[in-house]
Length: 232
Ligand SMILES: Nc1ncnc2c1ncn2[C@@H]1O[C@H](COP(=O)(O)OP(=O)(O)O)[C@@H](O)[C@H]1O
Ligand SMILES: [Mg+2]
Image 1 (spheres, protein in one colour):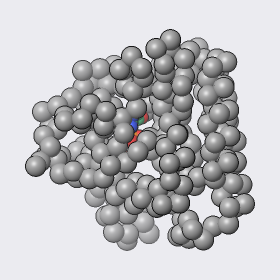
Image 2: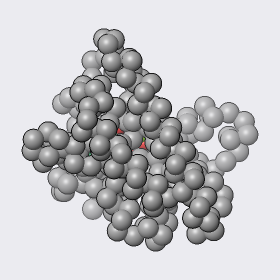
Image 3: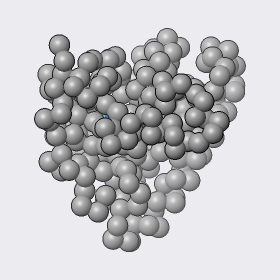
Image 4: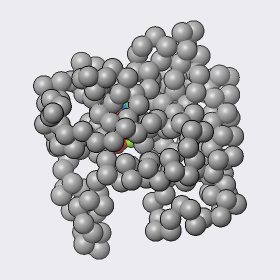
């Protein structure tokens, strides 16, 4: 059965996808390609020689689904302490929708991104602890990822407002050509270490911007009533 999204209000938008609460499952998100930014346009903007690649290689939903299947085979349950679960595709009136675990705080509110948290609260003690705990787990497992962007991590909070865990909701997987199973563990761990060092750098780069009026960049905040933030 086709899931109807076009008449629903999205709760967030990334560079490529629109995110909706699944109409039949309040604890799942369904992500579709942004209608204002179709795959053909994405490919065109990349320029030659990437324009020679098939459209599917620009489809984040498809890439993410494949990568999550591969990561699941390698890492199993421990992966999901800090990565949202992926439930596969459903047909929607806005194209193929990828369904994943929707990260909510204990209050029921959809969790804010790490970028929003730090913007609002600063890099407080609890956040530092959450980052340290995430980093330790990430390096111990040696999960392959692209850069760990502050708007691709969400901070899940308990009823007192303290961060329970950081969860990656986008941008993991192995973008290279070599299958994950062939990578020696030492190499994976070294790479995860570099990604964590880069995450710390991103946090330090955000902090001095906190004084300014405008939230930096286009991504990282939730919509209000289906609309992006006024200055977003
Ligand atoms: N599983 C999730 N739980 C909570 N919020 C999410 C989840 N997935 C996405 N979001 C929110 O939606 C935004 C955009 O989603 P994302 O998957 O990063 O899209 P894109 O691939 O376009 O970058 C995120 O920055 C985050 O605020
Ligand atoms: Mg994203």
